[in-house]
Length: 295
Figure 1: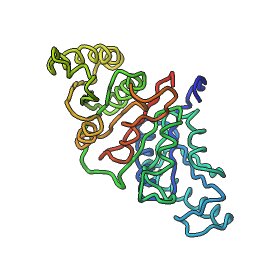
Figure 2 (figure 1 turned 180 degrees about the vertical axis):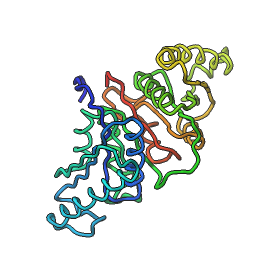
Figure 3 (figure 1 turned 90 degrees about the vertical axis):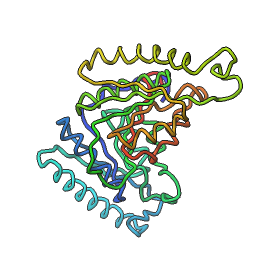
C-alpha cells in the first residue's frame, strides 16, 4: 500500500464481528460512536473456507454461512438497541476477515474490531486479525480489548507522541476525538535510555534540559492542532518511563488511547511499530492506531 493514494473516506464506521465477547464489545462501541456522529454503521462478518470456525463448532460451509447470516442479524439488532434510528448495513464476504476489513478501510472513517476473536490460539495471543488490520488499514483502527463497557467515563483522551509522522497524525486524530466528546486531551511523551549513545546520558546533559527541549518541540505541534480545536483542554506530560508502560498506565484513567502506527524507530516500510503492536489488547480502554498519510 506504500505510495498509494486513498479515496476520500465515506462517512461511515465499519465494525468486524465474529460472535466473540470482544467482538460484541467492539460492536457496542462502534454503534455508540456512529450514533453520536450520526453516520451509518457497516457490519462485516467474514470467514475463510479452509479455516474451522471454532466459534460455530462446525466446518460445513453452508452451515457456516447460515450461522454468519444469523450472527449479522443479531449484530444488527444489538446496534439498533443502541440507537433504533441508526442506519445499519451488513456484509458476509468469503475469505479472510483481515482482507475484508482492510478493503473496507479505503472508504471508511474508522474500522472497529475486538482484540481477540474466535480464531485459532486466540486466547494465547493477540488476535491475528487485529494485528493485520491495525498494520494495513488506511483509516484509523479502533481495537477494543475489553469485554464490556465500564460504567466510569473519565472524559479524557490520551495520545502518545514521539515526533514521527504517525505521531503527528495520531495527535490530529486525538484532538478530533477529544473535541467530539468534550474531553480533556493528555499528550504523553515517554523517554527511557536506549543505550550508552543516548544523548540524554552524556556528561553535559540533564533530564530537566531534555524535558524542556521536548516541551518546546511538542508544544509547537500541539499549537498547530489546537488552532482547529481551540475549546479542547490540553495537558502535556513528559515522563521518564517506557512508552508502553506509560501509555498502559495512562489508559487506566482514559476513555481512549491514540497512538501512531509506527514511531521513530524500526526500519523503512515497517507498518506496525513495536509500541503500537505491543499495546494491542493491553489497554484498559479502546486503542486507536493511526497511520501517517505518507505511510
